[in-house]
Length: 217
Image (cartoon, rainbow, N blue to C red):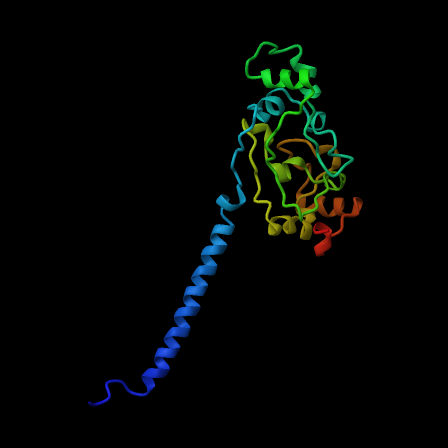
């Protein structure tokens, strides 16, 4: 029986297999990257269910309550701190005192049992983040958390991926603002950021920290 394929067909077949493996591997890697960067994986924009429907839009946007009234640790500690129930009761012992929605708050105050809030910006355990140093260097609340004054339900505004953090660490002059405006929502610089940013970087002695141990300790 005569030979159906030339000897060069063997090389072609082997090359085809290698190319197919590379193409499939590339497609698989691209798909993985697409999924890993998607909001499905990062939970960006995903409003978390809470035991009480607390509205930042109402408390911050409408009432004008400043971030540090509730998040007392943000200037001096690594954690912003979830406010204790007593902070809520400071106002709600006088207003909406019969609201059924706020009964869990009153129950928490009576029993001294903390409300189990769902953490929204939940970094992995291997990531170290200190709120106070960022505040002292002029990083605004909305830079990371977004316009909370417009959020009826709190959601994660940014992806919180490492590349997102590094964008600021590599180019802090694009993001920093004067310290007195750290908690201001809708902040607009008095002069172009291209001019203001480098001045604040020098004034606040901001370093471009990119080493692994800066965040992974």
